[in-house]
Amino acid sequence: MLSRRLFDIEVDDEFYTIPASVSSLSFDSPPVKDNANAIMSVMTPNSKRNLFPGDDDDSGLGMEDHFTSSLPKSTKRQREDDDNSRCSKRPKVCSDIKAVVTKLEENDDFIADGSRLHTLPTVTGKHSDLKSITPQTLADVVNGDYDDVISDYKIIDCRYPYEFEGGHIRGAENMYLHETILTLLRQPTKDKQIVIFHCEFSSERGPKMLRFLRSKDRELNKENYPSLNFPEIYLLDGGYKSFFNEQPKRCDPVSYRPMLHSDHSEDLRHFRVKSKSWTFGEKRRFARKVMKF
Image (cartoon, rainbow, N blue to C red):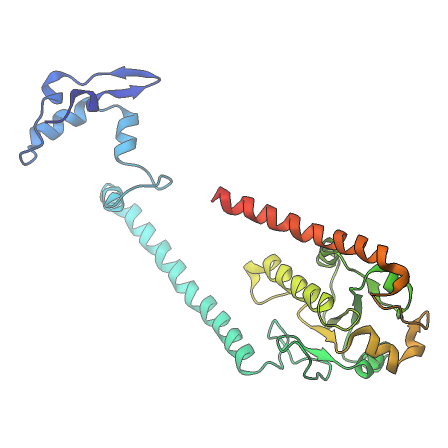
């Protein structure tokens, strides 16, 4: 026998007690129609909603059958038509995405959105997942040799400011912080625009920022995969050091200041802390998001 207290129903912070004829029902034997009717007759709207939740509730098993069985035939038919319509559209979207993924897997010469082949000749660099170009190719870009096939280019120098001030590729932008990289995604973009990343040797900071931009670009365009703001990105093989050794006249000023310069040990500590503080903050924010779920 179920306890009488289990049949107390809370309505607006008050309890209404089910009559004794109902609370004394036995559930040890098969349900009787009269018993079910007796229970339903004394249930409040709130208790009915608790037993038979709608679509927005986290309902249990069997609720879909209860819900659909009470719908008029015309409503059921409309729901079925809507479901069929949605299902008929999904395969094409899935097949289109699958086709792009297959294309990119089979031929890595395509840019990241699969729309065309890479414009610049690439070489095998230290990072096999990234497209690398030589200092000579970048010099040709700066010289305008590719103006007929690209609309614009950006050179992103990920070194620390004191390194950048000691010599950089003419026209380069100094971006060594993650939040600065994010500003690129808020800028207007052009078709056939390319971006070239580098740091001192293109070993760590440049590749890391390149991957960060691609990751955030994918996140920004997740509803329009495989579209990207910047689908064509390159890494300068050998970094600024190699470029300066080969193309010093294209540097401003014509000099090279290494990260570990003895006169800038304090600057190095300062900018390292500044660049890592953002990463630490991002990890904390991500941890909080995970905890919420």
